[in-house]
Every structure is written in C-alpha cells, then in structure tokens.
Length: 78
Image (cartoon, rainbow, N blue to C red):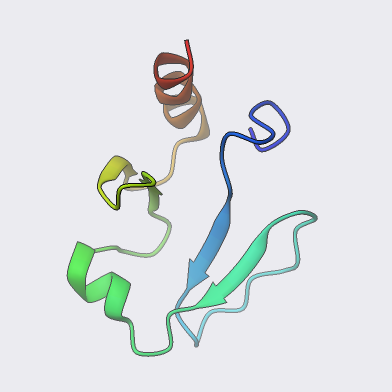
C-alpha cells in the first residue's frame, strides 16, 4: 500500500519495546517505550491504526486486515 499511495501516506510501525519487529524496507519503526499509544488508544498486539494529519483516528483494525485497510484507503483517495 505504501507503493500504491506514494506521497499520500507515511507508514510507521509503533511497537512495544519488548516486541522485536524485523526490518521492512521503507517502513520506519518507532518504539512506544512507555506504552502510551497502547494505553491511550487501547491498541492490542497485531492492531493497526491510521492516524490522519489532523490527529484523528481514520481507521482501526484489530487484528490488522490488509484488505480492509486497502478498501478504506480506496474510499479516502478516490
């Protein structure tokens, strides 16, 4: 999806410090050292959030479903 929406979205993986995520080309990995995001948003392992530029949650998937996120992005970027 990052390739399909080049210049329109920026993707980051925000992970708990105890979780080891393998490097993925073009994906920046950030550590939620104090689990603040998890506490504030109720994020669970394997969830995905799309945060809009204005700070609102545009999409939430628990568990992450690439097809559903793709459908959401098609609606957003018609």
